[in-house]
Image 1 (spheres, one colour):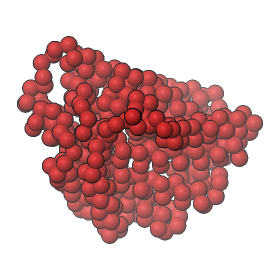
Image 2: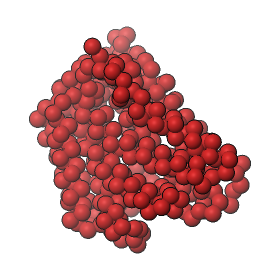
Image 3: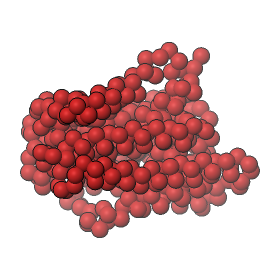
Length: 361
């Protein structure tokens, strides 16, 4: 996300990250207090389903099943862009070369998802640290080049400054899927409301330190490049590109299975056995959908952030239903907080897209 936000928001990148962290932390706190008493540990879909009815669970599951397919297409396009940048030295225009690389990355991920391969728990625990190390290395070099011009997969052409900042904020909800994890953690604890709030605040501060730290390193790396720092040497570009592609392909592999699991659960009409894996036909269908969305990304500029609007919309739907649940099922304070959050989410998701100034000119 740091290169995407830097391309779209420019010097306002830290402000966009801060707005996302404030909004995400508020969502997490509201959910934590909502499920603290009387709820079992569950996913966001099951939580809103228990509070609002089965239709809410199906809505969240449906949104996230679609969002995961769009998200993997965006991830594959970003990895392909990194590989092309390593070869050419600059962010390429969208085209057949990038599409073939993106489809190749998705093909590897889907084949792995169809196989009996499973990642050991130790690998899954270490993977976020590996991803963070790669992201930090890329940010330190200001790579891939965030000062890219128009006609790249990293930003649509013709956006007004306000439209670009809104797109950056919305795309960040892809990185923010996870604020809702408190619905599975908080009910299992015996903490009171004050300790719960403190725990969420500490967790939010930890996430903020990582995200703002990455954004700051990215910003400083870009400034260093702007004042004449040598271009990233070709060997370093290839190391960063291959490491990025490897990490992201690994995430695509597990995310394709996750999307298939959500789709299977949606088809069954309710939760099944926690260890019941999705059928191979469902995994293959999800893989085909990912490839279709990736192909659609080759038709214009800005494939990465535009495809990320799918996960962003799913997150907003889930969080908005959680806010509605707080209004309906919470006490007076929870109702006020839920109503305020619901208004903010609606404004964030609609105010700029409906404005005539989204596109410049």
